[in-house]
Image 1: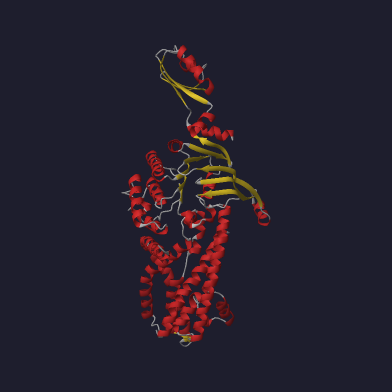
Image 2: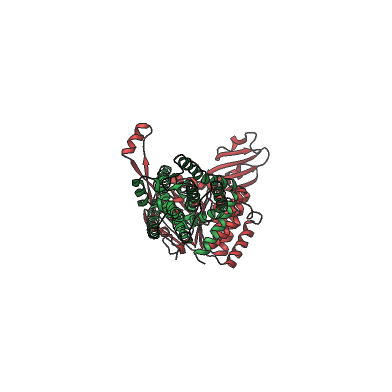
Length: 328
Length: 266
């Protein structure tokens, strides 16, 4: 059975619209023009228990709306949604005890007091037995390196520190399903890595299901084998990340390290007939070539120039994702 | 684990928060003491000019009246109608909705913990005022005992109606105008500005029909010994009625509000 099941899920917002200017403002008092915005438009997918899925899309694609419907904050306009056998928008207590939603810039912790005090309140609200709470807390403190943080008032923590405390707070009740909406937004590289490693470890230990949105592809690459891409509320891709890369990366980058004097003084110009020179410095060149021609061009380069080293690289995942969006 | 332990934990948390804000707590308290003090001085002056009394109130009774008004209003007031707009706008409510607990419990606990702390200041202020203004304390034991349920119910009348009012924030972003109307009504009809007995009969009737009298004036009149036993029982029954209405309002307005919230974007 799926941990998450959605079928033809739909969310349509009615938005009031008016022209600029005073006249339009007065007219809108009497008659309001509304427009339907299809934030989520008939998407379907299933997530198996214990799976980590990257949920990708540009701003306004409908990711957060979908996560809010899955966590029960939003009522769908149409379609089916089921999380752990519950209908999320009914928000029954049993359901809420098994899920968590972490949103990058929202805070659940009480601002003025140390996180540990908020955790204690959390323990009581979620009916967590004391020994289990202590055990989970120790584990979270250890994994996220929280020891020096949880006794300081939350307002005195840095953004990264606060985010780590937020994530710990959101997981104290050991939820089975985690909705993580940009959990690493605004964090430095070290903090991002730490949280990424933590999510992987939590998933491994507790067999939890994770649906993750992130603008940092490093998060997605590190955590998700499977990705779901949506755009304008519609599903564009659902499958392996590797498959996505294969299908949507139209080109490869050939990086060559030329022997001295290889271009006979013509520099980058000598390489232009082979592909688009995206970088050329000190005899090192990067060429962008069509994927299907990469092998042929490589052998021509090897035949035509004295080369010290050559590598063929996939384009950065960000660019591939952009390709998917453009295709949609 | 039951609601009781949730309340204890919530009380501890909110008390810890409130202890962080000593200055704002003092400002709130000054705001609480000043208005009754001003009305008291004004009415005393009027009474002295009119030969020592206005209606059935002499100068000492005015002092007692406003001191009790201050304490009752302090114990019963709520502020959540000023907060819901912010909670909805800033997404704080979404966080509260994700917890397996109705958000009203956190608000009740927060309110009680605030009162528990600030009462430590309000009581000495009340004692000081009664010495300075020579208040007339002549409270019977029966009235003191009746005062307890009347006071608790006055709190819940204000709490549930005020909380239901706060839900207006689901429908409008201009909730402040609604709040001001509500508080204007409260100022005149709850006995805060003048004892209801000194108001024109039409306004007295309006006060009794409205919930306002039962929020402040009723427990004050009771403690002052201005009510017959029959009136006390009727008053308590009316408070029960308003609590029932308040609870129903909370239930329905909350449900409709959440439906709207989850339809239009949380």
